[in-house]
Amino acid sequence: MEKEMLKVQHLAVIRAALRYWDEEMGPQGVTSFRHYLEEPTSAGELTNAHVTFAREWLAQCELRYAMCNQAGTQLTKPQLFQYVSEAELVCDSELAQIVAVLVSTRHQ
Image (cartoon, rainbow, N blue to C red; front, side, top):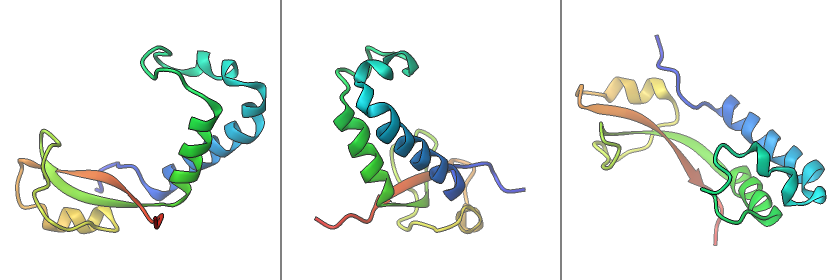
């Protein structure tokens, strides 16, 4: 059974939510979303520009998977995988974990 991970469908939901928020709630100002934050003070001063940037950046990202150590601080394999199942095939250690990676396709 495939481990439940962030998938392209989940990323589509996040993109749609950010687009809705940016287009429908953004014009009402930042006070419209402050009470939706888990910890309003931990994010610093949020602005509508932050929501717009997040929406635009995520729209240009591709989801990939990688192998890293249990602490999540170092890759254990040098490649990225398009599917979780591909990463599972090369997972050769119980000390490794599969992580989701967002890769920006935005060219500077």
